[in-house]
Structure formats: C-alpha cells, structure tokens
Image 1: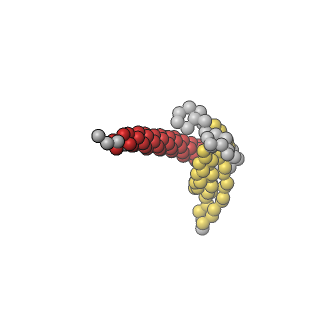
Image 2: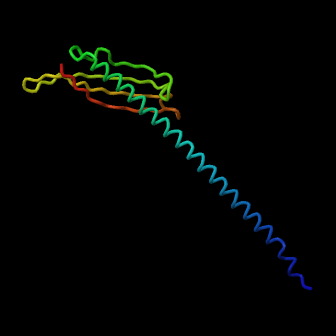
Length: 141
C-alpha cells in the first residue's frame, strides 16, 4: 500500500489537545463567573443590612425627638452606637441632628433634620460598607 495513512496519525493528537485546551478555558471562565456572582450576591446582602441598620438609627432618632414634643431638642446628638445581634449586628450607627424653629403665621413648630450614617468594617478596606439616610421630622408642640 502507500505511506500516506502514517502521516495523518498526528492530526488526532493535535485535535485532542485543542479540545482539551478549549474545555479548560471554558471551565476557567465559568469558575470566574461563578466567583464574581457569589461576591456580588454577598455585597448585595451586606448593602441591604446597611440600609436596615441606617433605618434603625432613623427610627431611634425619630422616637427620641417625638417622645416629648414640648421639650424636643438635639441635646442627645450626635449619638453613636453599635448594633448587636440580628441581621444588622456589627454596624456602627451615628446620628446627627439639627433643629430649626419655624413660624408660619400663628403656628410655630420645629423641624429636626436628621442624618444617619451606618458603617461596617474599616474605612478604605474591602469589607467597608456604609449607608447614609437623611430625614426631616416635624414636631408641633
């Protein structure tokens, strides 16, 4: 017979190596995509916790201001505390307050501008998350 079939033996080896390389690249890409997806999900969960921690600070500040409207002031602010337990545990919450007296005709009332900062982790670090909420609370004596 002739010598041609012997020259084609290396083609199968080259095709097999090519397929192995392509499959390995696809597997590496899928692993990196899954890792990025997992990281994004974890960040979204911590961001939600930050939002709820800031909302807790806002609820606390509004309660403090509204608990005694006749003598409401910002003397207890700035206030800082760390939440413990539950989903927002470990967040540091800082509440700032400013009070404005408003008179419209014969009606006088106070407007409290509240700024709440909820932080987790070390500033500048990969584990640092923060959420800021601003709210106005109107108190009529």
